[in-house]
Image 1: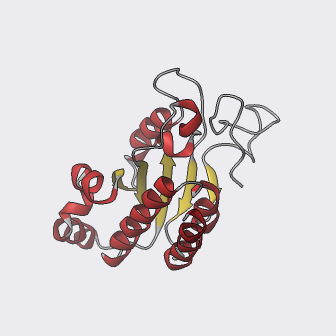
Image 2 (image 1 turned 90 degrees about the vertical axis):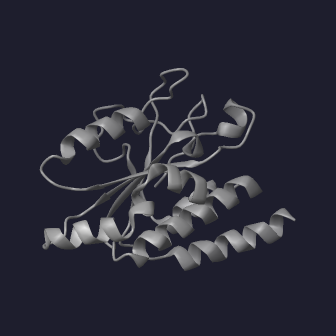
Length: 186
């Protein structure tokens, strides 16, 4: 479950029991549906979420179906209150489980190079997105992004992030929720 924002407008880095609590801490596991329901609070956020869903669908179309995504940045903050503006993008780190055939991974990346290019993803999907295959060297990247996503740059406040399971293919249902909300926003 994704917790409410704390008193400074951030997802808390851990639950009410404190940092020693293992079960209820960041990254908070979530379904795509719950994520969309929680954060589609304005038309601007709805547009960003639609772009994010399109990004997920594009990745899935390449054959990537197993992994996790960490979502951080201002999108999972009360940006409208903190900064008096909506978030500009969705920060995403994709960690995909390795293929048994290493050549298949290289072919997949080489044949879809744009989807692995942060500049392309930012321009096309409004996602500041990075992708890694989980392997024995992954711990460095995992530690780096956990550190980067777990602090607010301006204030250095600790904050939580959201974790989505990429194997959960619920983009179409999430889009239906966004469409219902768009009608309500009109």
